[in-house]
Length: 85
Length: 239
Image 1 (spheres, rainbow over the protein chains, first blue to last red):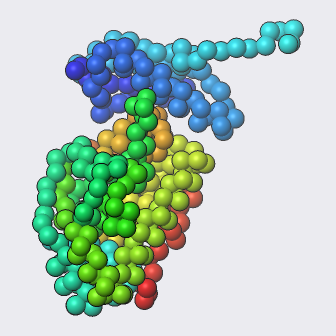
Image 2 (spheres, rainbow over the protein chains, first blue to last red; image 1 turned 180 degrees about the vertical axis):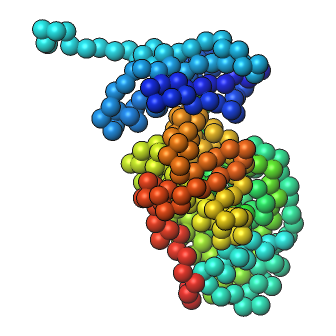
């Protein structure tokens, strides 16, 4: 199984994943990235902050960037329109 | 062989020579397990309890979607399942997180201890009460603490628990856990743990790298975690 590293890049900086993990395929790594984003942002939301600036970068063992999941892509977002609802 | 277990008990009470001999005599054999070995499954009938001598183990439960919750971590000197002596089968699994060496203590021999050594029996009762206190503190972490405080609190807890059995050096200790192990203990994801570790490092509180935890500022780490060792009942007194 391939090993992927999920680095977090957001407004506070870059958190390199030095450990990596085995995934059946890239899609499984993307799924893990989405869960990671939801976990990080839900913790921030409980503290009163919602900041979508950031992404998770998926890299191979050779440090080749193969994909990136923007924070926004982890959510289905519904907003009231400008006139209010 | 079971020196760490005796250290853990002696931290909370005096043990007589006869009591120490009784504990040593209760071990029927030693077993070695590789990493990630589930050696107790929920529901299976158990006739012995497992005393961890080297390595780390955990109690855990899995959900059908593959999510895992580790409900307690065990360090050398801990019984992973003293409670199986009275429960006879467990509601959770027990697995190794590193290569482990364990002592097997048949329930029959524990029964003999309860019959012949009332003080030792109370000490083991204290042990299961201590496990319950750790579970309560984890409930607070899982339910209420922020990710930063959760990780900080776990590092503070392990610092105390490993210190009791002589496995700390200054304010650092070996911790052969993965970010996934930490995530499964704290109700986070490994990505979130990674991000949180960076935050703890940048705040100058603690570093976790290469299987080693280095606490840079213990008083501040304890403040961030709202950690008090009271729930680990460190007083040495007659039980």
